[in-house]
Image (cartoon, rainbow, N blue to C red; front, side):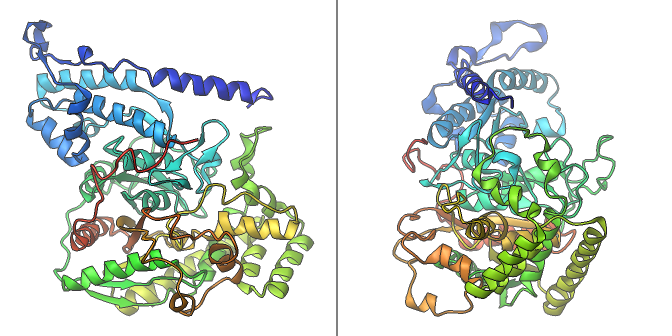
Length: 567
């Protein structure tokens, strides 16, 4: 942005407001049953009143495709789009989730698709699934944060709590889907950016292995960066949605993406009785009561269905996070920040802006202070590793990553013989808005506090980026202000992990975890599979979803009264 960035922001927001007023009136919605001759005499008026939208919003993506393919009455691409465009407007009013609005263009594409379908009943892969982009959704600035906020479009709020974030980086997409504002969407993931908002908002998603779906056309941390691989994956309101999208995108190589293996979606069979490993917390910080309950309820549901569930400990989780932080900070985020120029930077970028370029003596002083005065060797170790590196150091760290991957296979998959792993998405169900804002000017405490938010809270998601495993996310439950309070038994259970992170989350006058304030916020779990077993992960997502039964998630679960209008 130029120095007149505020003027640019106002213009961009005004453009969005104008586009939200695109004509969606019933008089425009006619299905021409005689398109070949161009005669409108055979036109059949379709019911497009807002009250008739509900049946489209309650259908998942797979059901929408079937209705359109079957030529069911009132089911056209155009009519479905109208319903979701209207709901997207409502979602925008409630959560501020939209950035680019493309209703007019999408309507023209939908009409063209309907005309083509009437003529031939044959459409391309994406169009057969009703793949018409009609909005873009909000993301954090640079997409390396999980408070979904930027200087242009502001903050997206959680659909279930106006005081909490929808997550990031794909927070706008997750909020829109949770509000039934779209049947399906896509997000990116390099440390949890797809999975965290999925859990926060109560929807479904999969982060495939790196080489299963193309990332062409998406924004990367930095072009050419391969220390931790960016992945693209679908987000939806049911397992059916996720399977449908993966069938379309897996192995669809193009001339523009020559590195993607031609490995399309494959049919797999899974055992009747599965063996799951699980953990309810990790060595970095103890998971909150609500998050632990989500894992426990999933395990109990699976056991009732005859599946075996074995608790285990992740081998050296801190080493995995050390590697993750070291790799992503190795080039000091120079390429990520290059396009910002003099633009205002969001507070969530403090750590990425400052920590990697700190003089070595100051970084060591901070680490020593944390270890000595806060008695926190975990945080001290991580601070030392969040820094710029020489080429030699980067290659050595990439080698450490590869060795950790081999160790994880030996000590988890081969040692236990698991089919999959059930684990938390994050230690917290969500976090309050502004959690990343620094409240002190003391350098040491600023760095530590920023590190807590931007780098290490996504530990249990970042772990699986380091080892590049496919992971699905399924919503399990919601925070309950009665069941999920901090109790004496919880406080006395297990290792608390990093003392500093623990104190930020659970202690003091305003801890981040507050079961009463978070009441009703969704909590999901990760379902992890081995390399190249993405399709098995989807099958296991369905097993978990069916075992948990009806619990108030999916199309139609959201009410616009669930939260208040965004600021």
